[in-house]
Length: 127
Image (tube, rainbow, N blue to C red):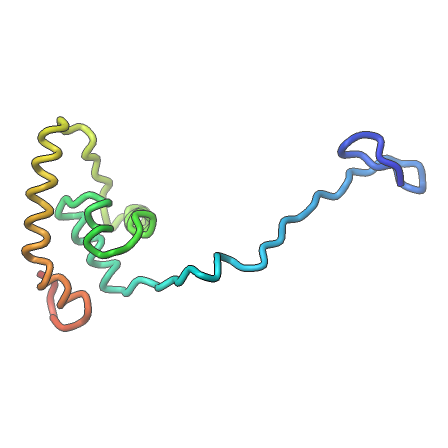
């Protein structure tokens, strides 16, 4: 077989064939030093409830100690199954957003002990 151009190969029978592509094979699905911990069912419910209360994704991620991508995936799934409506907070003026953010963070941290108790299964109802 002789290569005529980058993607074509002439076979023994004289016909042109497409050259097979190299396939990338990953030995591990993610780096070995990364430890993945699946979120609890109550943790996913907490994410949705906090979002319904108006907390932004980065604040929820910071409070739960999770990545923003996990929070976004959970919220995207709940929007797709019509459990949650999409919330757009980009239209607020910058100073109003900053003040509101600091007040929300202080409020969340003052009630975080009760959220944590419910999250780990100690309470019956969410706060």
